[in-house]
Image (cartoon, chains in turn green, brown):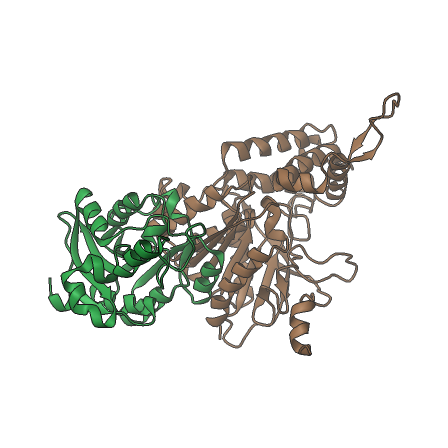
Length: 215
Length: 389
């Protein structure tokens, strides 16, 4: 893996950051499925730059309306209820940005995403990040941060994990990590390269099924 | 201090259209029907709302459901109530007459002015009655296409329908793929379930066993199977409502009588009185043979029959962008029926959007002013509007 690609500096806008980083993995005219597409920002940007055939899934009515307003194809669907309506290998790319930690069964969601897509792109906040560790260690409370702004009792983030947890799960599920980008604070890029699980605030993974290929 | 113009848009609901005049158009080119019979000529009665733009790109076809007709919006001169979808069609409404030229026709076989079984068969000089040819959804679409050609519209901006109307929108996309840009299918299904068929069978039985039915030739006998049609309507109407809605609306309230001990007088529940009223109103203006024809078209409709029951293959044949809406409490055409459609569209790699609206009102939700439905429907119509500019 290219070391330059491995860490990158955090910017103020998390979504923008993901977009600028993942578009290198998206081909022109790709069929792309965004699971938990939110207001459709990512899909619209990729549509503009890569002419993708975009498809979004979300559960929130306001988000879906914003997507419809933007002219996107979206369906109202609860990822937790399964994704069997999407045929095997019917999309080039399936994306989950900050969605994995919100689903009931992240392991099943990962398998499903790689069944449906030739490649999967997943981003999630790293619970092993030093600020989270400090928060828990010194304050003795559940961490709160830019990526994790909600109190423990009222959060969609029910399956938080560390970078190490995630990679262990990928190994268990026979998922191949093709690329990864560790997002860190400005001054900690070097440390994040050495200790991603401590100094990475969030992570972006490009995945395929074992034996799968990407262009 | 409040801005006046703002308070206007927020406080007063959009107004209805002014007085609407239905138009009757005669078509004398024969129409070959799916059953093999030929209608040598026919009339379609229709209404239009809004203005057709210069490049004739803003036409929208509204397809009516089982008991609907061409009067979708605005008022006729003698109307107490506006057309059946006035909540959604009008200036500033979801289907905005300021942007679109909206067409709604009474389907052939109907009883609101288009050629149907209560008319005289020109070949025999007698009422058509049960000799009116059996109809399929595709026949309605073919007749609507004639109207489209008459209006010199090459492509609808959208074909929109709820329930049986949604089936027509689907059928349009299949039969004339390039003649529409959007198919908006609300509370519909690709085919009826066994339960749906069974309900229709009971309704049909109620009509055909009415002693005044005369095997469909009641008009010749100056009779009408009002009793049978009333039962059919009560049964049908029941399937349009949800248990929750009926609970909210009627509960176990009594209209007359009492359960007090020592009182003999029979009670009438509110729901009983409501259904009787619905049935009486309906059977006084709707033709029983039309009802049978419409139910048969429903029963026979199967979107993918011509494609070996492969819905993906059928949808792969379409060119329109689909917008599918279902309602959580609809048990007549449950959300799963819409989801089957959406799954097939996704797997046919056709553009589709789908929303399942949380609503307690059952199948008929699409006729009611439901804020969530209005919001998503408006959001979708925005793109239809943008393409017409």
